[in-house]
Amino acid sequence: MMNIWELYKNSHWVEPFLMGSICLFVGLSAILYLLITESRNRKIKQEKLRNDYEQVIVELMYSVVFMDTPFSLVKEDLNYAPFLKNTYFRTVLAESVINLHKNYDGVYALKLEQFYKDSELINTSFKKLKSHKWEVKCKGITELAEMNITEAFDTIISISKSKNKTLKITAINAAIKLEGIKGIIHLTEHPYPVDDWTQLNIINAFKKHDIGDVQGVEYLLESKNSTVVALGLKLIKELKLTQKLHHVEQLTEKAPNTFIQYEAQSVLQALTVNLANE
Image (tube, rainbow, N blue to C red):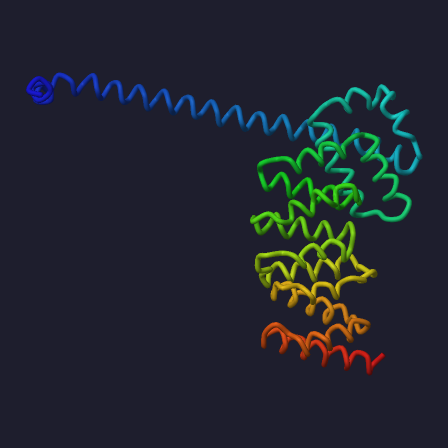
């Protein structure tokens, strides 16, 4: 202990310590600068590569969507075949296909969906559902729902039980797009509260996708979860489902609590007015 104290009182250690600290600082600064420069150069290179790939993709999509070129010929075409094996090219291609699908319907949308399957871009989306990162899962769910991959429904329903709010809403919205009312019937047995924000998102999903088949929405009114019952009532009211009037009437008579009873009476009144105006 005395040796340490004597060393501390001796000022000879100060100079090498300061020199060492300065060298360490300069070294770390140089490494940080090189990392930033490398990252910037990589992004510039990637952006240039994306621009080049997008030009190829425009020609490819024109050939597939408007010229009816089957994928069996595309993958053998020397203009495209080398690109289709490139991971980054396939990432840009997937984004382009999905964005195009949002802007087309009818036969063109069906061609894009078929290309999405034939090119095995669908497999990449399915892999995203297994990711430990919720952001990646959300992206995979959105892609599969946009491309109308109904085979993903059961997996998406399973993910909708997540505690992550954003992931839950994304999964429920996707399930509604794929299977309509079947996408929320599973909530009948949901043990946790469905908050107002989630309910609003579900209602908006029905409006956005213009779900015509609402057979079964009345099952939500039979749930033991009051928030699920409230969701069912809101759906019936917002979508003006006058054909569910009888079920709402029954709920007003056997509501589990005064809040649900009040909500049911309000919906009943609104449906009655809608029925009178029809």
